[in-house]
Amino acid sequence: MAVYRDENGKMQENTVSFWEAVKRRKAKLPVIVKEPAAMWDLVINSGLEDQELMKGLPQPNWVYQTSLQQNEMFVFGLTEDELNQAIQTNNHALISKHLYRTQKMSKKSSGAIDLWFRHHLETKLDDSATSKELKKFINVASLGAMNGLKVKVDNIGSVMKIS
Image 1 (cartoon, one colour):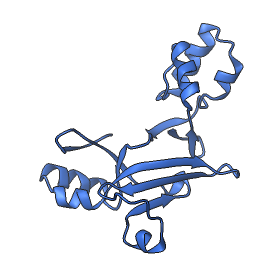
Image 2 (spheres, helix red, strand yellow):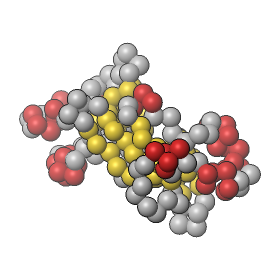
Image 3 (cartoon, one colour):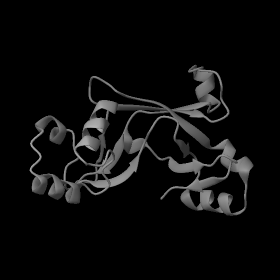
């Protein structure tokens, strides 16, 4: 899923299925479009006629914000400055307390997005009210409420902020 900001400042999502990703790669288009206007120029100039493929592309005036994929890591509850400070000072305990992995993403029949993030140390799929209070998971019901910062954790546990 790619997240964009439209011309009105509203967050918009562009979900790409595995099959759509394959079709985009075969058409020599990026799976996650970071520059919609330039990509549309490429599509128009290439003479691409696959209407189904073009229907799933982001609008040319949208601005790329971030992407989400299952198991990617996000930090919730820290400001960008606090996260940068924690990374610089190797404050792994603070980062660990706020580190969540993308568990699942779904689209409701109303068109709303439902995002689930599970704490990175949590092993049980317990979605009870108690677990929510203990911040074992975070459920984000709209992209506008999404306030996590995307990070990458390498294979030795170092955390790097993704801009």
